[in-house]
Length: 295
Image (cartoon, rainbow, N blue to C red):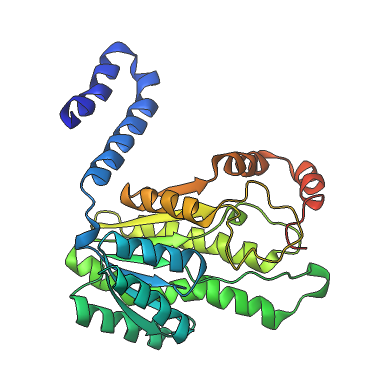
């Protein structure tokens, strides 16, 4: 079946002129590569390091990875919350270790990664998920709060990558996954720190993808929309296409298994955001100022 699928792009080239077939051939080959990774992904052979694993997306991913048989290292500041998730994973016969640490502390993150490697032998997958939100009005900037968001959302991911990437390159395999946001694409009202942190996170991981090409280490950037987590709880503002956490987790895992370079969802909101990227600034400003998601 896979062999037959692999021949389709070449049949297409015979039927269409090169000027038309090249972009479609590239897409077909990328789709086939994703299919290959999906068919050969075995979670029971994976050791996964998750930051921000005590709740929300990180916690839900940890539980689902554990259910699928992965070995897990869970990092977050709240040791009690981590212990609860570890207990839930172990009740299902999974393997997990709690690694209480602050992602802003590079030495602590490195020590946590070393502990995970000592226990399970290696790290195959990093989920750089730790993140915070916050409402910051540009007319009343608080530099301390702005720096806190940047330090957790961006520099926390840098610390996590630095703790695992050299060993992944040395072993010739691995995958680095960033949980970014659709907010990375353009600025949003009262979200300067969050948008800046996620835009920088996406750009950082894209640079990593280029630097690590040919090393055997893949890079995946996830751009979710609004998901029911503690990060979105308590907002009165409308959040279009708000997704249930379980549904979002399934989409994220499938993108990881396919080793997609970038994945944005839900498709409805992702399409609107991409349209916004094409808007002239004057048009975008009128649209964006009428839609604040931080109140």
